[in-house]
Length: 286
Image (cartoon, rainbow, N blue to C red; front, side, top):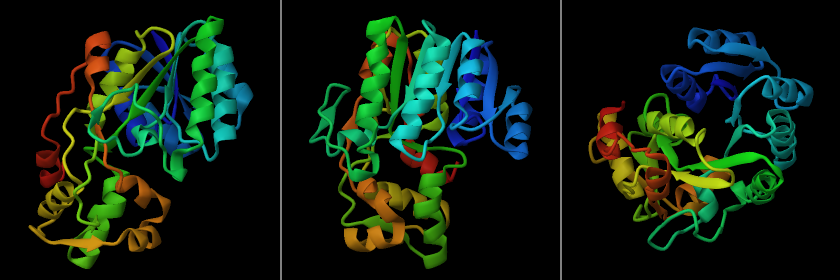
């Protein structure tokens, strides 16, 4: 299958390109810079020069593809919806896989699935109208699918590295918001890449949370990160207010108490996460 994707040179995109090519697909990837072009080319994808604001480029690339995967992070909901609309117009009745995120569910009060009500922090509240519009295409002949990844780990993880590993090295203790008793719905980036490949076969209107089914506490994750950088047991608690000052609005997402199950994707797509020991991976710094 010929797949066009956005965000191919990013953390998720590089893993997805590798998975798609490994499964025999050919890939074109949107790139904004020479560096991005070199990155996707080195992975075996064909670069398509442009950005999310280049709606004509998106539409044309989607029209010559057999499937589209939208991974790139837009600056606003309006930009994301415009890009999604251009690509859905281009792909027509072919699979269009859109990226959301599990943070839209807010605190989950136990283990939940895709049917849980939304209660998003302000950081991701804009996703609702975008996803509603994307999924609405299923009633007009389109084949939209939404994947909502949990908090990702593995490899060059910019979120955990930026807000936990790097500050931990600098301060001599890894941060933890509050007592860290809240749970994180984690997924290894390579498992997420396989989920995107599987989602190309999904029915129109399908929605999947991308999680590994292991939901450790935030404190245990901080302790694992501390172990990976030689600071075994050294974790420093931050108040939410102080975390907001240090991390920005993402602090409100890190403090969410989320437990999610991958059961729907397992049952409907035959997808199975391979990485079932996130704390071990974090502790090894892999």
